[in-house]
Image (cartoon, rainbow, N blue to C red; front, side, top):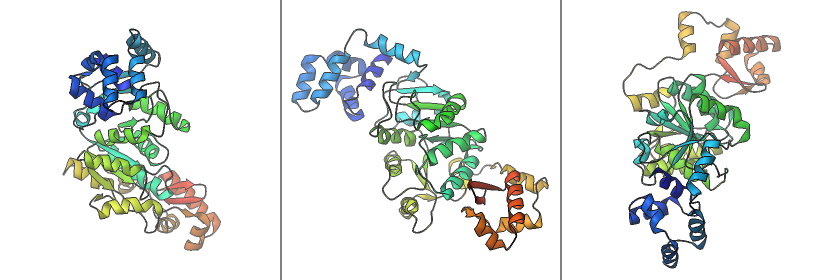
Length: 369
């Protein structure tokens, strides 16, 4: 039966809703395969259920060697797959009305069974504020045992995966292409790291490249695998909000980080909060909402500070107090503190080494969450 799920899933001219309707009409994917003979496909075309292109695709795929050839491609690419009838298929995803008929993967499939998981989505071109917030929140969430689900896109997605991996957390990347395609290409080191230490999945087979039409479809999987979705920086009209719509339809919780008034990338998140999303300013907000009253692991920097292993000099403290989560240019920091260039540069170098601050881009510094 698994191979018939594979076959039905591979039909690109049929949307997921029509595939599900065919299963309902005929009973299961094997019966769909058996009943979709040339006479039936023509009848469904006359009814308006199938387009001519779909009829042609179905007819051309029904070859004796189709299954063997497709499985050979999967083996050559070292891609494995699960279907809704497999034990490894996650119950959380199975509960959504348009659950994928197949999930292709590389990595540790057991992550899909993790009890606690949060989707993290946001702008592909975030501000420095967005990157810093993502890093701080995700580190805290991931080190407390919550799995991070995202789409490995540029920007917030990639920052979320990296932050989870850096604290030894668990992360799942849901792709808008076959799992043998890394997109964007500059994420290849991250892609390999996730395969090695996490999980990369997709409902698209290895023959499917990263196409624009695929990404809204993959968004329902990000939310479907998650208990809730965290939004960090999103314009009022953006692809990120497609994931939010899917989350709401699936009954998932929506979390949002507030942004600066007047910032385009804050309009979407602020509007979500206005309409009932849970406001998040600390990782603890999500941890407490998901896990309840548990002992939250403290930030390693905070632990060290309390133990006296890391301390700031008076000059460093003065400069640190002039910083915030918003990156500030070094020249502005010099004017703000009234200290000399040498003092400020020395203090910044020291505090960065101690883990108190981060250089977001060259010359721009901010507090590290």
